[in-house]
Amino acid sequence: MIDSTLQELWTIKDGIAKEHAYDLDELVHYLKEKYQPDVEAELSHVSPSKESESARRLRLQTPEKYNQA
Image: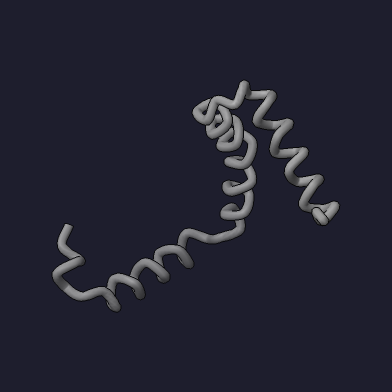
């Protein structure tokens, strides 16, 4: 027996694939365009100073041989 939620997901997935002629490149392009704005919105609340502090801490924890640019 197939779970109804799983069946619905498969139906949606198959519909999206059909809309893009089952072309993987087209599908990837579509999904990137569709979800890229969401990623940018999620990151918009992070201040540059917090990002810099995280990067600095990571750099301090990384062995010296990997910190050479």
